[in-house]
Length: 375
Image (cartoon, rainbow, N blue to C red; front, side, top):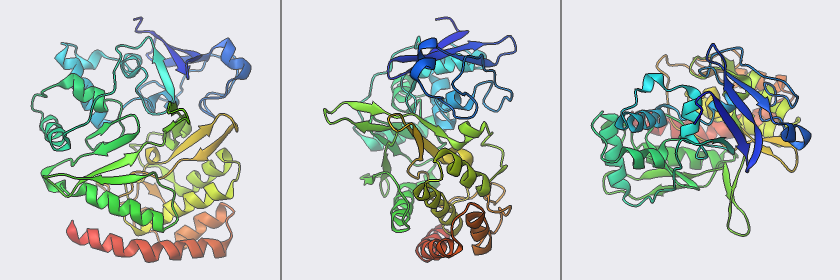
């Protein structure tokens, strides 16, 4: 494999090529065939035109956000590094294009990378308690029993918590011994979100002999055809679309509402969904509401973007105690005043904003109080 070039594909079609520049950025150019009838894979950064695009910032290690979304976050990176170390490869010298090649066709969303470093076949998920124990060993920096299998199970996953992925489900495990019932809490939060009128994927609490259960969520970047085949969907996080470093707080819900308005063509359902999620995060104390925790799905047939179902909803605080995404400039203690300001500036009727905020507050505050007492 040429480590300086990588082809990007979508449903088997050539989208374009990534090439490493002398200063270690990943330049991208669309393929001629894709320019004829394809779509911009990133609506602002990569418009559909004949040009060599080079990322101006290094928020994603020299990649555009659309490609960085294919790479794993903390847990997946840890598994990838363990797998590379097992092969005697020093991870410091493994660049982003090589890491994309390692992911190949197993990443989130629909973009794939060729030539793939290796083909990762779906793994059977059987004994969840045993997998949870193996995750704990890896987190404790003990030697993994099967680094390749663990990477194949979850090497392309996002987020920091240990997890495994099947073709249709993501199953999360506790990050520490003190967090044994994290799955119970996340299931309760997702159920409450449904009562708050928020669109969420199907969720389950899988049984365990060691804890209250493991949280499982159906993947919304995958769906089944009528013939049973698996369909992959193009998706991007808000961080990728905005080319924003999600690790550094700097986003406000005003921006998310504006982004939703532009991408979703002022579709009222999507605007109200984003407003509801903001309200829920405030009243349910979900302060880890950074820009990778909001995503958009592209519908190729309709040639338009839609807000994805909500995910990663749980009781959480940041190390600095404030929301990762501020609400009308307030990250410490936003309330109805700030929520209304965001909604009204986005063009939602004031009365409707108040109705949604009050509805969600009545559902979310008791839930927040219950889990705050347990922490």
